[in-house]
Image 1 (tube, rainbow, N blue to C red):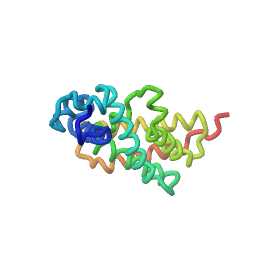
Image 2: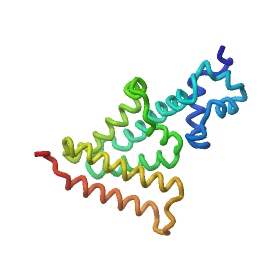
Image 3: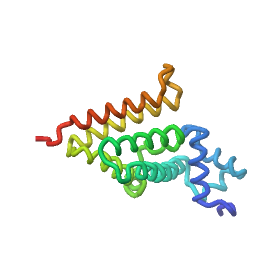
Image 4: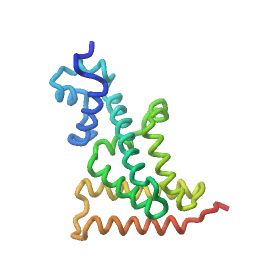
Amino acid sequence: MPRQGLTTERVATAAAEMADTLGLDRLTVAAVARHFGVADASLYGHVRNREALLHQVAVRAAALFADRLSIAVAGRSGRDALGGFADAYRAFAVSHPGQYAATNLQLPPDIGLNSAGHVRLIDVSYATLRGYGLVEPALTDGLRLVRSTLHGFATLEASGGFGHPRDLNMSFHSIVDDLHVALERKPHDPS
């Protein structure tokens, strides 16, 4: 019987917050149980195992991430949308490192395809680049370029990987400008 006061929602919320402070790799059912001051067994009515816990964090994090990106690009297109998308992407990845890592987990199809947050992440990402007039396969290639660049920058920033005194914001915005130029130059018609 689940411990009174504990709910699946409370467990998932605590796990998501703990992923940011502990790191996703250190998030366990035992750590969440300690957070609530209960025995591990008290959580098993809310989460089956560590893998299921990580899936809950991934689904919650994807929804939050999608919300942030959607707000950042609403009513914008082209360079303006790309800038909003990039700023929101970086901010989420750096301020929520564990949850960001969870959004990159490979989920089983039955979870990933039914995660509204994951679906919205894909939709808002493609919508942001459609303002460049790209069609497949250039659209997907462009998105991979953008996502890889933003992921790399945010991951290096979060780990303190930039030692040069150049202002990070200036570098980041220069990189976004470079992405904009690259996207504008991509062929719009695959033929």
